[in-house]
Image (tube, rainbow over all chains, first blue to last red; front, side, top):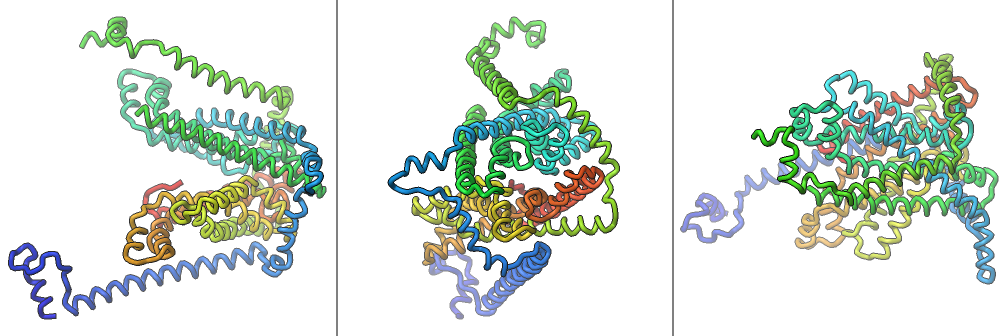
Length: 313
Length: 284
């Protein structure tokens, strides 16, 4: 130990140092102090984690009481969950596989048309919502609009559009416009305008201010500043966000029919409520496949877009 | 310098022909893109048989509804208590759904991450499974669970757990895959086994990111938990759908206001918590 203490006192760079690559050893007291400090830090961290876990569990129990969680009910009835999937599964036998398949997908022409409608509802809703969001986002960006009131009001309007769930808009619109795809399109459009308006505004607020100032300095009007200073910087991001929103809206449009706002949802909820078991699985499968396909396509498109943006910079 | 004034545009154009040349290829592509977009929209109008005469009538009726909505009013204090209880159910559904979904998704997301499980088949199966679960909307899960455990918020909780399981599985596995691999290698090289390297090399890095994603989804789940009542899975959506059906517009607007306030406050709280956990960096 004495030797170790002596080594500590020697400057490491000096030629008298016998082994310059040696790991420095600390005296016992110093080591103990460090170890104690480490233990204390770990203990404090552990206490924080346990405290957090305790709070989380307490809140979860309170929420469980509020949400009428009943483990007895769950254990007793859980078998129904897999049993449901078994009962909606199509009946296949080897001998008659093809006619079984035809039986299972008997409604394919109708369902395909309804799925097409669903996609169109999502598309039209996304496009019109994106255009509204596009028009509003510049008004909600603090770096382009001088008036604080305009920014504040636009932001609150966007927040309202996006916080009220689209199904609620659809419920109200069905009463105003009648059953059919129109309320679905409008509901998705409003929700999309709110969601995209916010994301667009965030993109616009993060742009490089130099082009904007440049256009303003050479005498451009507000519209010209937006068109030539801001727009070229944000367009690829906007399209990427809109595509992502389209993906989300396809899922949303699939359930619009639950409240009578068009698309495949109407047939699905009817099949569920009337226990047309194999229809449920057929429609669910078609929805899942469509959603996956759309996810795949939009992802490819978005990667290409963002890649393009990277190459031009 | 005078040659750069706008009067001398022809001169500038002559000197920099590349900048001023009309790029017909580019213009054609833009025209096709815009034309296709608009064309598909018009096709949609025809295919969906959008009735324009009902559009204007509907707008008038919508205006009437909005007039009837003002001022928002719950009717009576008994109603207020009922609505607050429903709101509590909604928040519980969102909270327990998010928590349960995250807890279930964590082990599965490890299976779907390339740097944890080297086996391609396991990874592929897990991913496709998660995609399938994600492809089914929360409302559909709610329909199924209502059939299993009966009407009420418990079915809503289970529905949110299911749909979040798919979402978190994907998000978590992506977060795990982009993690720095040096700490994990450090653990391996000092003698730890594979599990040690995941526990001590990987999880500590990704945990804050995962937590922030969970908090973000808590807010978004509050929105979706407000509507699953429409299919009978508890919460404020049940009340809202009911009041819309019986055209009690003042109660409708009161409920919408209640939802707005709740979602914004949860947004605010989860934002604060997220910043506290990961610092000023925003994680979507």
